[in-house]
Picture 1: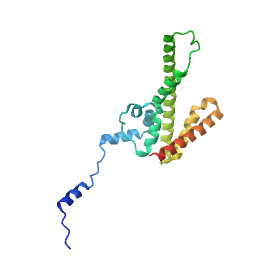
Picture 2: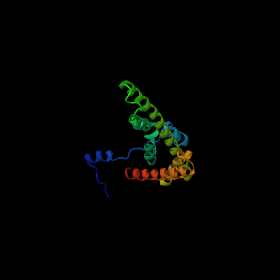
Picture 3: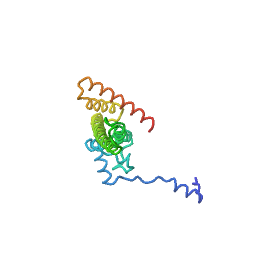
Picture 4: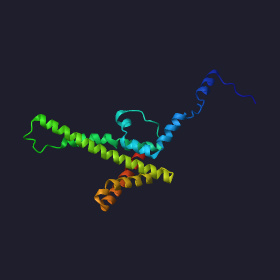
Length: 193
């Protein structure tokens, strides 16, 4: 049997359809991935790093696709959203003696209030991101799978830890509430990925 001769046009088409060779990661990329797989590193970054979402910077290393949704959820609140919320809520507070204050005094008062509120909210959101990320990472590594259960457990741990000062009842309510919220966010993000 004779094989058909490829035409001049067919030869170019076969070259463009050729499979590209597999690119192995460089040693630096491997070290970056290993660093990002460390729960302590991931937790600290989730608590304080807002670079990707607010400032449009490039990530340190490309996260695995199944981790992207919760990283985006955590990187937004980790400090940056707290600052924005503090600015908003600080601006809503009126001074007690606003009638007796000059315009300049009111502006200075509002600026100070916005600064205080921003720092308070930034700390709260950073701690929330750190606790959630650490809990989810530890649960994921212990269970050796990534599913909605990890988010539910991490949410429960986070809500319970944040509400612990309020006593056992507040801790339980915080656990259930934040766990349910985490599951809802996970379901919402699953539909949009």
